[in-house]
Length: 204
Ligand SMILES: [Zn+2]
Image (cartoon, rainbow, N blue to C red; front, side, top):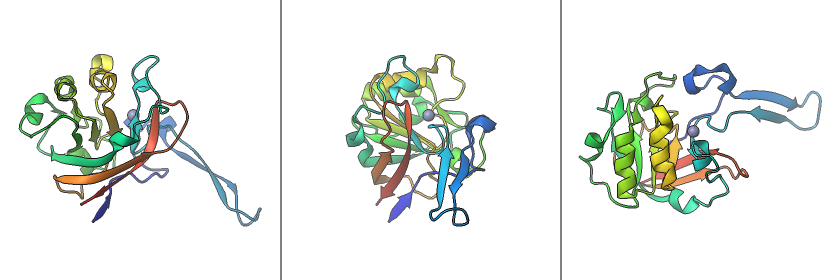
C-alpha cells in the first residue's frame, strides 16, 4: 500500500497560529478567457504544510537546503504511536520504544486528528530531543506544524539540527498504523533556504 502522509496545500489549510500572513495565496496569472494557457502564482511561507527544516532555521549561518540530505529522507522509517501523549513527547515516552542509531522516527500524535491548527499541539520536548540526538537517529517527523511549541531558546530544534538530524513537520498520520514503512520524502529543490515543502510517501 502507498500512503500519502503530506498535507494538502490550499487557501483554507491550517497554518501556524492561524496567522493571516502565513496562509498560502493563489493568484491566477492567466486563464482560458484571457490567454491560451492557464497559470497560477502561489505565494507561501516555506514552513507551510509538510516540510523539511534545515539547520539555518534555528542556527545562525547553519546549513541550508543546499546540504545533501536525500539519503536520510529515503529508506525505512518507524511510525511510533504517541497518541496517548498529552502536551509533549518526552524521554519517558521514547524510552518505551526500541530506538536505534540511524532510525528515522515519525511521531503519530493527536495532532493528526485535527485539520485546524491546535494552539497546544503535541511537540517533542528538549529532553526527548537530547535523548534522540544521543542515540544519533537520522531524522524525526511530527504531525504538528512545529517540532516544538514556544520553547525557550528552541532547544528541541537545536539539539536535532546541530547534529544534522533531519526534521519533517506537518505530517498527516491519522490513516497509518504504527509500524515500519519505506519512506520517500522529497523536499522541493530550492537554493539556499531554511526549509522546503515536501511530499512524503510511506509504503508497506
Ligand atoms: Zn518549519
